[in-house]
Amino acid sequence: MRSIWIILALVFLILLAFFALDSETPESPVPGEPLPRVDLPTSPSPLLKPPSRFLIATRQVKGPFFEKSVVLLIQHDQSGALGLIVNRRTKTPIRDLLAEPENPPKGPRDEAESDPSGRLYVGGPVDPSQVVFLTEGPEPIAQSVQVLPGVYASSESEVLDQFYDEDISTEHFRAYVGYAGWGPGQLEREIKRGDWFESPAQIESIFDPRPELIWERLIAEHEGLQVQTTGPWQEKPALFASSRHTTPESPPLKFR
Image (cartoon, rainbow, N blue to C red; front, top):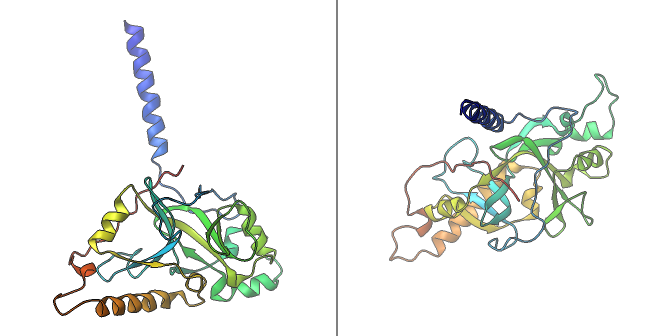
């Protein structure tokens, strides 16, 4: 009997150690180390219409990540949703993801990255150790999924090498640290609450050289449309029915 209790205690300790390791906070990418992968969808999602679209934060959304944000949805089905914030550019150059000598010789790519187009973007609050690449071109990139005609998403390190070897132009390349994630039914509730406008995704907005202007332009278009479709019998547009000031949550999403 005593041996059974000892065995049960050991099993309990092993399970406790496992869950403790599994709940550790993810770290940001370390320069030079292999990049972790995001398992992107390989087939169209049944609930995503059209295949890829923008979520445009309404004015009631507050918080450091999603206030005045524009999100490109890549996956949306019964298991939840995954997207990338396309208008949160940082001051960090993309080359910081690569391991390089202390004093490397400057080349064309380094000069290109002095331009804001060669900087990292914050894709969302979920798992900042993940890096997702978007490219625009006639051919798909390594292990990628097409999110729009001619636009491909991948989390393969090989894509970063192609960029640095100048196989991909700075103007048609974006690197996102982290992503936006929603659990089952969460995004639908936020849309119903009035946190997001939905719109077909625009390639020119994804690769806009001035991402800080994307939200202002899109929100003006949608608010103008909302005013035009509001009759005199309505006090306010239906999408603004909620006056709650909330921040959409982004819990980690386990992908298939």
